[in-house]
Image 1 (cartoon, rainbow, N blue to C red):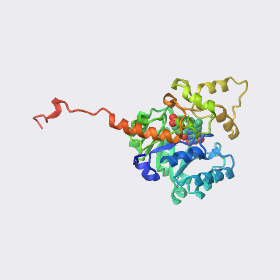
Image 2 (tube, rainbow, N blue to C red; image 1 turned 180 degrees about the vertical axis):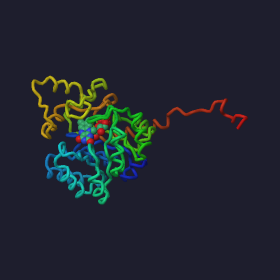
Image 3 (cartoon, helix red, strand yellow; image 1 turned 45 degrees about the horizontal axis):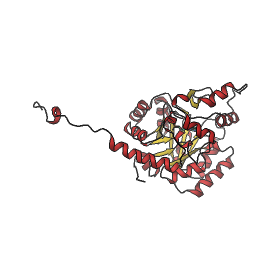
Image 4 (cartoon, rainbow, N blue to C red; image 1 turned 120 degrees about the vertical axis):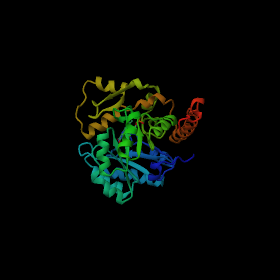
Length: 318
Ligand SMILES: Cc1cc2nc3c(=O)[nH]c(=O)nc-3n(C[C@H](O)[C@H](O)[C@H](O)COP(=O)(O)O)c2cc1C
């Protein structure tokens, strides 16, 4: 595959500006390794491992299977992730190349992360949050737009990406609804330096998701996605069928403990508007191969402006 150099690929020393977004209970070593080996960067959330030893074991396995850079999402919030500080120490111990924070500010980790050469990217859905993380020393922003799987923003990517880029001057990773090379080209036209792909990678052989979940992604339309804060306390996108099953269950806990989160994200399937373009379950490397080929085709077949006779020659007054 050709390389596609951008500010983000230079920063992370990878060939392709394609990031497999970290997904709770979905992204495990098989997916991370496949994407990093294909030239992108595979990422997973530290919370996928319930204990510190299990996190260490997961990282050990990944490091044995690939030498390529990887990323880990670290939620810096005591309530959502009580063990984050100890998880952070493990990420430093394994010299994880990229740490992606969501919620809060990365202020307390940026210095130490950079001292071991790790880059820090931060998920943001608004300019207000982007300004806070930029001030704290983020290396890049992940612009989580409307229609993203998992916790999603409410601003259209058409506006969020150029807005964050112009206002902060940081490299921007586009997240939300990106499943193919045409969408990647659109994101780059808006000013993005990489794409962050979640939902599309659930429908791969390597994702740890049930066959039912993968099948539902193929069968679903964007209209089948529900955007609500009801399930995890933060607005997120869910597949309507599993959301309704949860709603109609005779009793469901309203508590937001970590144990409840594990149960909810296992039982209620999250996905973004990208389901519109998901037609089959593929190996992760094939998703990337097609994305790169479609990207190349998209940028070479965009309509080109043609000079009209009226403007072909300079007006006499100039
Ligand atoms: C099932 C699922 C679980 C997710 N879990 C996390 C998570 O644990 N941490 C995180 O930062 N983002 C999480 N996300 C969000 C993704 O990292 C990413 O922002 C999103 O998937 C991009 O939008 P897309 O799904 O439309 O490609 C999750 C997304 C999905 C679909």
